[in-house]
Length: 295
Image (cartoon, rainbow, N blue to C red; front, side, top):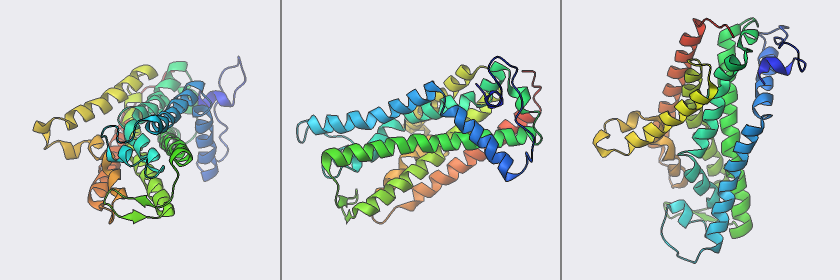
């Protein structure tokens, strides 16, 4: 199902979205709402969100039943028993390499290629303000989907962590203590930071989606790009390349759990993500604006 089909009837040819005030904010919001309805109405996307939610649950239970002092690990995991809020941070750390990028890759890869694959893309392009608006709305929907995915992990992790380990003042990675409210604020900033990073990956997926009519192929390509950046980032001989890789800055959110907050890496991460998002959205626009759409 596509945005064009939402306003159609079963068995009938898809019809374009009504063109009443299409360029107005209301028209953009209606188009975006239609996109989000489709994304969060698909069973595969809901199943993916369910998988994301399972990880913090499993993590919290595993830490709870494990023997005290049972092995080292990331600082977030070691700190879980001291404050349950760290379950959310640990779950985000575990899911950021593969699970969250995969969730975003599925939506980004399907954004344009999915419409072309089922033959509804040309109906969407009959709307005034066509291709540029289409890509803008698609990217906004990808970014919102990334935010939802990150929040699901954070909220489930917080609930499970507080239920199993309790809350109260939390000890930051720098060794200082802060209030529970401040910890929740830092978690929210972490979610926003990771959303920006995943939205930039989504821009890459949007560009790839304009190159093909096979959404599965586009999704696989996004995941491979993500994995390749992680691989390149792990090769010490390519240290000169690391700062230019999108994924290099993903774990910089750990600096939000220091006092004072180390902002240099976070700032560079945000700038890098903004550049990736801008370059690949413009590349998608350049490709799509001159593309002969026949389906």
